[in-house]
Image (cartoon, rainbow, N blue to C red; front, side, top):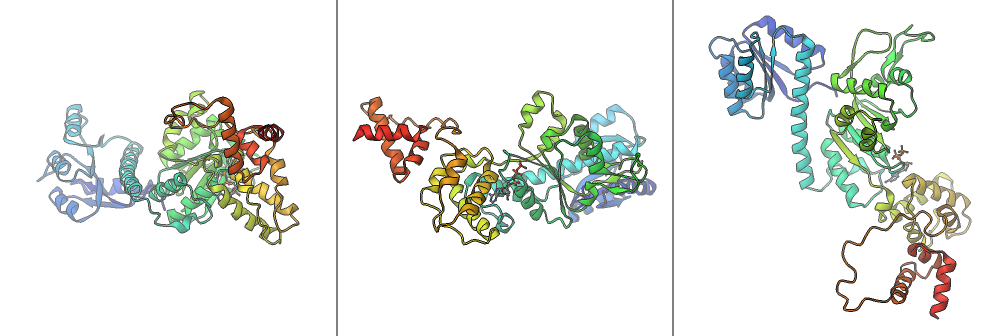
Length: 466
Ligand SMILES: Nc1ncnc2c1ncn2[C@@H]1O[C@H](COP(=O)(O)OP(=O)(O)OP(=O)(O)O)[C@@H](O)[C@H]1O
């Protein structure tokens, strides 16, 4: 994959062959290669009818079929095509007329090449986003995964996460960045790997943790340097962007990036090129960029610690991975998965978990998410001797009842709506205790956790009932 080669054709129309040649070369230097040229404007309708063109760069002053007439015709017959007018006339009235006729942008031929390239890149981005938007709508309407094999490493049965997989399938081939948010240990890197697999990119996935990198180290790591760029730079070094050529560059902990490095990253995304340290020859970005963070970027942006323009650029495509406590249905699946994995890694037979273990784990809020659950299971399996796994390690790891439990969400419906008489406090407490004991299969430790009280307090209540 190349960052700027569009999947559609770009048609240049001008009666001057020299201009066609020069603009083709300028765009090719910027990595845009899917270009068609036409020096006779009368041929344009035929080309548009037969070739997959989505962007036209159009001169205004041409014999036979003048630019403005052609512009109006394209806007009417091919609303899916964007037209950029590139004219020799520096007249505001002409520009306004062209915009009214439906031009996407207007450039005067004497402008610097860079500005024209930026305008073309902007149009490509708009067209890409339109196409991706359509793909996302289609995928959301049909909730079947087309490539479930890309997600085999992500154990889940959660509906929210499976909807995220559908979205990921829709945006995996995009050239735009993808932002993956979610608490620490929820599986953001696994998701990035799935996107990379689905992208079909032939290059590698290169992961860089950018937390704590100072600005110079950040630039050196990403952009590389030429020999002699600074004292001690005895050898040239390829940056990670180059290592990820035709693949994916995964920047983890993006929320911890310093402001100067944020500026560099934004420029890279906007211009699609960068300079290795000590070099004045730009290199093209030829990797898809995926970023991840466990931070709240909106909050960071509000407090001035994250640039708004970069945030908006990064969030073009974004997913929020829900924490484990919001998908308790995954706990038994993950428990089983990690028991097998740990047993194999430690050369033991897979232990049988006690029936109540998954229930116990569902009472815990897992601040470290799946990584924490995995570590707990490995710990338990390494200490394990009997056939049935002991709950001791888990009980120790999750601490006393109620210690880490977040406030329970308010019930969505009024539980007492149909009751003529409200239960008294004592009656309600008894009902709750009975329900918790039933759900925990009679295990007081688990029932106490479900109720948010200590096990001795529950035991006392049970005794009082007898
Ligand atoms: N759904 C899952 N199924 C199986 N393993 C998972 C799942 N989610 C996470 N893991 C495992 O949990 C650990 C943490 O996952 P990962 O490194 O992807 O999290 P992260 O969100 O990127 O964390 P951080 O924010 O700390 O970088 C890894 O060992 C990963 O393989």
